[in-house]
Length: 192
Length: 192
DNA sequence: CGCAACTGGTAGACACTGTCTACGCCCGTG
DNA sequence: CACGGGCGTAGACAGTGTCTACCAGTTGCG
Image (cartoon, rainbow over all chains, first blue to last red):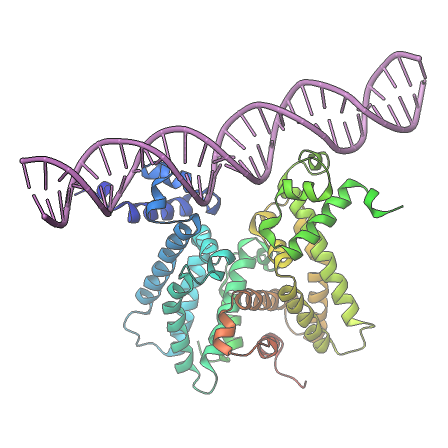
C-alpha cells in the first residue's frame, strides 16, 4: 500500500526527479539512482535499457510538470490571449529558474536530438498551447514561427540568467523587464 | 620548428579544438586528448590541474575565434550600426550552427558558472562589441539590457535550431527570417 | 499436482573515466 | 661534476555505464 512498493519503473523516475531538483543534474548517475531506490545497479536495466532512456523519462516528468503549472496558471482562460501568453511565459521562466537542474536536463542536446527517446513528443503539448495562444493573440502572423521565436527568446533569457550574465548587466534581480521586452518584441506593444 | 614541438599546453588545446569540431563535445575526455597529443594521461595535469580547466581553455579558443570572425566580417565599420549588428548576429548564428560542438562547449553551465576558470571574461570582448553597436544603433535605450536580450534571443534560436524544432515549425532550412525577426524585435523595424 | 517458462532483481566483470601519487629522465646552473 | 627542478610516465583508486550469468518467485499449463 505504501509507495515503497510502487513499481520500480516509476520509483526510479521519482528518485531521479527528487535527485535532480535537490542535487543537480550531475548527480543523476545510474548507480546513484539505483542506490537511492534501494536496488542493485543492474536493476534499472530491466525498464530502461540505457542510462539516457532513464534520463529521458525523468525529463519527461519535467515537461508534464511544466504543462500542469501552465494549465493551472491559465485557469479558465478568460483573459485575453496576450495576457495568457504573458502568464505562460512567466510560468516558464519561473519554472526554469526555480528548477534549474530539471530545466537543464529537459533541454539537454543528447536527449532531445535522439528521436527514439520520445522526449521531444513530451514537449509538444506545452509548446502547442503556446502556439495556439500566439495564434489567437496575433492572427495575422505565422503562429508557429512567432511562437518558436518567442520560446527561443525566453529560453535564452533563462540560460543567460542562469549563469548570472544578465544580473551583471541589469544589476537587478527580476526578470520582468526582460520578459516584457520579449513579449512586446514578438507580439507587438499593447496595453498591460 | 614544427608545431609538433610546440609547448604541450597549446598543443593540448589544439587537439581539443580539433576534437570538439570533428567528433563533438562528448569526445573531449581528458585521456583521449592526451592520447591524441601523444602524451600520457597524467601529462595534462602539469598545465591544467583539472579536466574542467582544460575544457575552459578550449572553449576560450572558441570565443577568440568568434570575436575574430566578427571583426573580419565587420571590416572597417563603415556600415550603419544597425547593419553591423545584423552581420554580427549572422556571424554568431552561422558559427553556432557550423561549429555545434564548440558552441555547446562554450556555453556549458559548469564552465560558465565557475568564475575561477575565467571563461566568462573570455566572452566579454565579443559581447562588449555587441553592446557598443547596439548603443550606437539605438542611443535611446539601455544598450546592455537590449544587447543582452538580443543575445538571449539569438542564443535561443541557435539552440532550438540545433535540435531541429525550428526546422519542424518553419519547414525551411534558413534562419534568416528568425534573425530578421529578432533584430526587428529588439532594435525596431528599419530599412534593410 | 508437477514441472516448465517467464518476470524481475542480484552480483560480478569489463572497459573507461578523472584524480592522485610516486617515480624518473633530462637539462640548466651552481 | 653534482644537483635540483621542470616535465612527463606509470600505476593505483574510486566511480561510471554496459553486459552477462545466475537465481528466486511466481505464473501458466498439461
